[in-house]
Image (cartoon, one colour):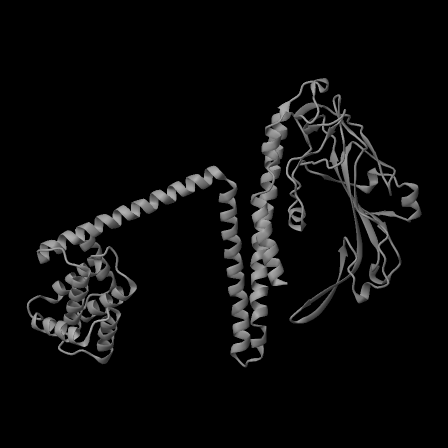
Length: 462
């Protein structure tokens, strides 16, 4: 389950950023003043008045007046079964579809949900096909008191109860009872249509072919066939706001589901450890939180990459800034390396080879760790690692050690540390092994972290 949630959420986040931009499609349409001027398959927009008394025939009620679309929601009060690691939990809930479980076996849902529309829409002289019509404006609840039941509704014995039409079945604790609620989109005085001209009627334009479960989940239909309240510019603003709101909902939901999915997936991987005394439950709990963190980061990274790849201009700007930043870092590193090499030339009288630098580093490192007259076993091990890393022979190690011992009293502790830092910086960077050696050697002469960092920066900058 966790892996399914994780995969579905990542797919939804990606597809959401690459979804059909119906705002830009609507904006690109040409306004048509007269329907008679339209040619077949032309994408256009048309603004005009609408009939405020538009009537739509109902099913359980006789009709709805003054609505572009009415959504009917049918729910049943039944048992919900939830199973997790702690066992099975039962609860009574209103649900849009009857859950298939042992306690709901005797229940049957009689009422149905639906979207109710007229046979055609009309904006001024323009007729619009209702098939695949898209709306972006807000729907409002329709109170049952403003509606009249049809014969079918009466036969079903529906009765008004608060904001619902209620079907009581006489079950214990109201179990099996059903209810209907309605939400409607009011007919605006003025509306703008965006879509395609067909044969005497405006029809849906399938701008992009969208299919699959994820596209359906995020409501990415790839269609331009929008009827929106207001003049063209007002309608475009409404479409833009609707698209932004829809994208943000999917973004937040996608990251939340990815977080939960990651937690479930990682918990399931370590579930068998729960039987180990003491540490088992702890590991299982930690793995869940770790999985949630990884799921969150995966969702966030997917969102950023998907957003950048869906916005060519922003991606180009991002790459430009990134390139400029990397170039600046390269130039800065090159300048620092040149400065260090100049200082080395002044000190040594020549530009040292890489092999010579490695030997000089070893000499200064040996002198620093031997400063107190004693090299501990751990320090000897550190020096041995250094020589093995460079694959030096025993004879060479003896030679370099002897040279270090002979030059031990010629320079101060701090001078030795500065020389070691310079030699380490000669190639432009201090790797992890070199940094560990520097920290240990500096510690031997009482130079701690912040002071060592300051010395490194000073030698780089001059």
